[in-house]
Image 1 (cartoon, rainbow, N blue to C red):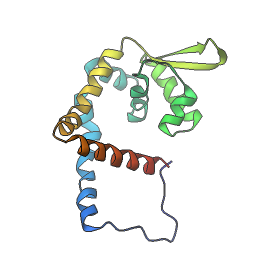
Image 2 (image 1 turned 90 degrees about the vertical axis):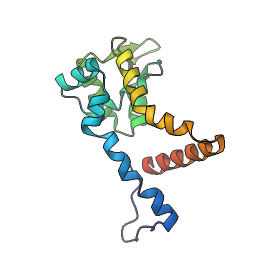
Image 3 (image 1 turned 45 degrees about the vertical axis):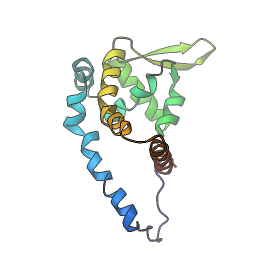
Image 4 (image 1 turned 120 degrees about the vertical axis):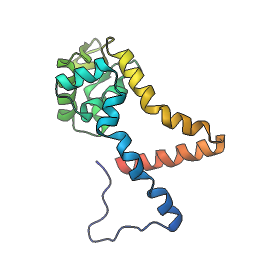
Amino acid sequence: MPHMPEAGKPPRMPTPDELRITSLVPLLEPFFRGSVVRDLMPAPLREAMETHGLTPRHGAVLPQLLAGDPLTVGEIARRLHVSLPTASELVGALSRAGIVERAEDPTNRRRILVSLSEDYRPPLETFVARRTEPLLRALDGLSPGERAGFLAGLTAWVREVQS
C-alpha cells in the first residue's frame, strides 16, 4: 500500500532542484502504459494475455518468477504488496492461461508453488530485455558513482512508495 500523506498536513513542496527531478517522472509514464508495452511484448505472450483478458496486474507477477525458483502465492503477495486473495486470483488466471504452473510444495503440502511455464520463459525474457533496454543504455552513460547514486535514489523511492 503506498504511503499516504497525513490528513490535514500540507504536502512537502519540492525545491527548485527537486522540481527538475520530479518533472521528469510523468515523462516516463507513457513507457509503462498501453500500446508501448503491448508493442514490446513478443506475440506468444501478448496473445495469451489478450486471449485470457489478463491485465498489467497479472503481468506484474511474471518478472517475479524469472529468477527460476518457484514462489509461493504468499511470497508473490508480499513482493507485489497485494493481499493473499488478490495474489491467488492473479496466479489462478495466469495458470488458466498456461503462463504459470502451480504445484504442491513437496515439503509442505498445504503450500502451492508457482513457476513460470517453460513455454513462456523465452518470450518473457525477451519482453523484460526490451523493457529494460532504455534503462541499460542510460546506465551505460553513467560513472560508477552516478550509478550508485541512481540506484540509491531509485531504491529509496520504491521503498517510500511501497511503505
